[in-house]
Image 1 (cartoon, rainbow, N blue to C red):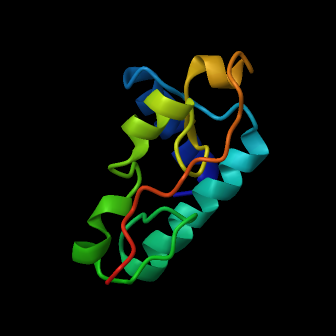
Image 2 (image 1 turned 120 degrees about the vertical axis):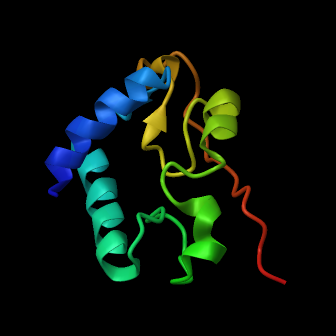
Length: 107
């Protein structure tokens, strides 16, 4: 699958989830390329904005869409990597802020 093919799939998926993909298509295609690279590398599409361990069991929370996405979009208008966003975020009706990392650091 190419990044553009994945873009088309995720654009429809985001719409069904009540979200959008970031309107910056070049940025989104870079993120999607990272997802596909991680899928090739690890066998799963871990978030390219986080360091994956290579263990799907350990990384299950950061397989895209990560488990933090909904809370991030609800609170900030964007997920951690700014792939999934709200309409208001895309239309710049809300401030674009840095999303804090919700994932707990390993002990």
